[in-house]
Length: 311
Image (cartoon, helix red, strand yellow):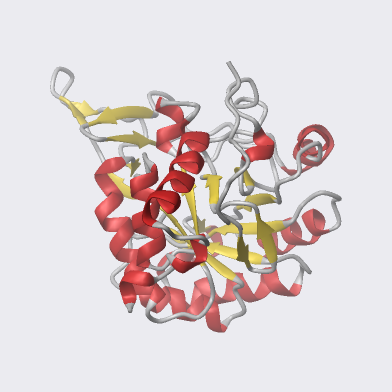
């Protein structure tokens, strides 16, 4: 049964990199498909924004199975950015997504700087795209496989190139698999990023004790879910102290309580991933829970919460 969200009696709207969101809740890229998968369960018009799974220039079939593994309080995934590619997305997926009113944020990933540039340019010319979220947790095939998001200079180069090839807001999604996430955050802000998403998944693995082999075919996967929430929350807290651009907090958000923590730590908005895989109605429940929290606490505007724990 489709779930909807009541008209709020408090102000849930936030401003994010020039976008007006009716509330601060959106799906996390990689967990929401292209919206059609969740439409039978929730009202997509109730969301603050719609974020689709990562799009690459060419289609990707992803990693071989097994590529999902449940863990205590989390999920390991090694899907490998499976997607139909840019051309199919624009032709077949985008027309459906244009039906809905929340801003559409398209997550992009490239193997080279040039691929990021082409993705940005072509999506900027496509009607209906409101912003780009740039996944920099990808290896640079021209520089020995070094992950773009782990080296400040490389992360800044991707940011600058995308900015040059788009008029849309650019949101850089940061990986936690670095020594100092604030160093990367400052580098991409200086390069022109309009907002940051943090965090992407945390690297991990599992071993099948019967076969005595790694449980994932790709050996290493990305850990998401409640297990990484303290890591994600701390990352938001740290980054909020060193940048001036808005943050989208994500990582283990299961309830409105979790979302409030991220807002208090300094996030302007939140993205919900693994929770939606367990409970398709989680996004709408979190939106309703935020309204309830504000009413209970006597807070009229959700913006009063943003960064309040930093003061």
